[in-house]
Length: 224
Image (cartoon, rainbow, N blue to C red):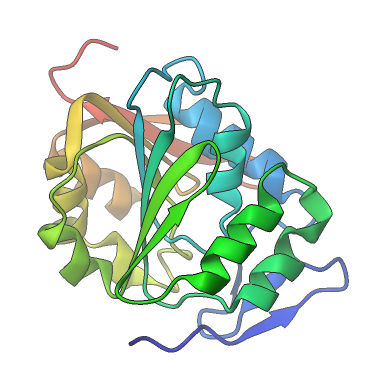
């Protein structure tokens, strides 16, 4: 079992990983960042359909899950799979999410507190989520699913290089459905090259806030 990431808090209430010296989201604009990078970056919610499946590297506070669920109109539930090596305690998750007032926050925190084990199953009103606890380099190859959209949201590649290796990006590609996409806040050259080598057509887009660029892409051979 991995120990939770020790965190500190900014004056605005943003959690910062002291393990990686990196905030969980842009200070003062976490929801806007998620909407720009991960939703718009994957052309969501426009691509939503019954059975749509999002996968993610780095569950963190659960903000991305809540933001994705907030624009889900059904039918059925959105499917969400995430891989997290250092899960936050429920009280820290609740504190981090307080300022966003997103629907489903209380249900997420309660389900997170009640879950345990190597795969935490969270059945929420609009989302069926499974959070795999452990090193994604070990967990993702064992996963049997395929995602329609990937949120690549690990800590900075410079500070958390393990979550951006060419081998892991290849696993992301092999667990992507036909016409599947990814998006990420980083435009680091070695990450872009790894994704291209894995089979994605990678494009550079305007980033959020102080980040000049971000990256998004689709499996090569699929029509954009």
